[in-house]
Image (tube, rainbow, N blue to C red; front, side, top):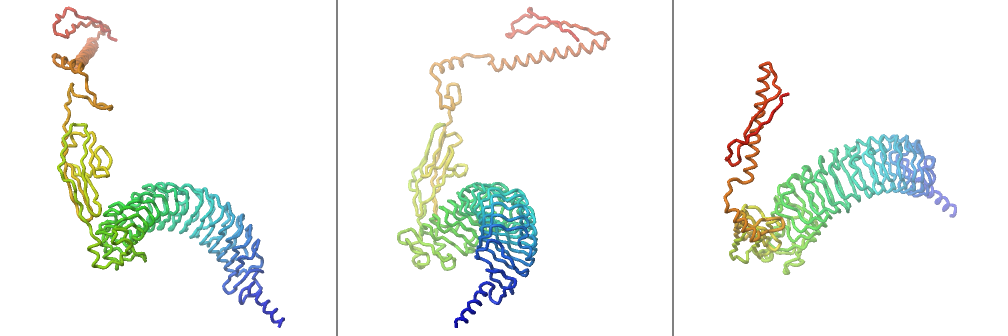
Length: 602
């Protein structure tokens, strides 16, 4: 009995070491082998180096979860058929140049969760068939020029959770077939645009947990094949340059868990092929109307966990293929039907987690509650009290007209408002309205322009129209429009501004304000105005200048004439005497006081 137990224990030990059906030949001690599959599993065996005695027929070698510190030169040169090598979860700090030389058929290399700080150029030489390289969770500080030069067929590169502070411009040279790059949790403070531009075959790019505050212009230049871009967990990112995504043909874009306070419309408008857009977990407060129309192929928009207060009418106008809207966990009170290009195309709607006011604006959603897919999360009402906390599926058709109702907007004070003021005065017109939901107030000028909330003429938050330092051109009618989902009302007011006379007794306007002339200045000014002046100073200056120019012209003509006359006679006259009599300024001179000067001809 005891002998039989010993035999069984020995067989069991061999099975653990070599695997079921394996023999000791070609399988190292403390490893499990499956010769028919070519697997050699040495994971978690406290190995300090790669074991000896590996079969040359091995196709998969698992050395993970050991205590290997160094990978030497040509360490695995005796395994020409090896296709997958896993060195993850060791304490590797050094990999020598040409460490993997001879692994012509290797497709997958994992060196995840080790202690690598730098990768010398030439480490990955001799791996022409490598498709996937995982360097994540190491302590790599920098990628040097030509680090991956010989990995011409590499398709996926994982470099998450390293201490990267710099990626050299030529680090990715040679990766012409790389399709996916995953970069997560590093110390980079800017997008390595120049290095990325070498990856012209890239189709998927994931950039997670970076300390970058601005997405600069042309951040992803020359990545024309890129289809999916994920930017996530950049807590400092609050600005996206208008040309940052220029040249991309993305179908999927996610910029989530960042610090964007507005939808980056100008950066998005170039993405005509975009189908999926995720801006979740950003402090975005509004989706404005008519600014997403260039995204003709957009099908899904996710903006969950933000600070949305409103989605304006026409926000998705022109998006004929729009199917999914996810705005769960925001601060929306309503979602109007006019937001969409066509609600008939809408298939998935996530509205849960919002303080919804269940009135006529949401009636269209409730009536489609059986056809719309709420993704397992039914919206619920926050107001009115009669519907508080009730989910949309709980309402019957009979209740809808009474609960989901609105009162049209109505201007409450319709007394005429006409203001007649002098230029420079400040005028205010009031416009109060009620209704359910609370109406919005808009002022329209006589030129049919919407009055903004800033400027000399502005609309205040309480509905008041304020005109500061009124000008004559401000005269006209202004119209107050009060509107809500149930209807509109309006009120017209008039403004007449009288211009101030522009004369010597009128006040002058300086930067410091209006300045009235003193009484003595006014009296002197009046006395001076009563005296007739034959000419003013400006006229005298012009006349004097014109006379002097005429005189110089005459002298020049005489000089030229005399010069040519003397040449024609063959005699050169060296001097000429010219007499002139100046005209009296008052016209009373007799010409006795003449003048004479001599001009020398040279």
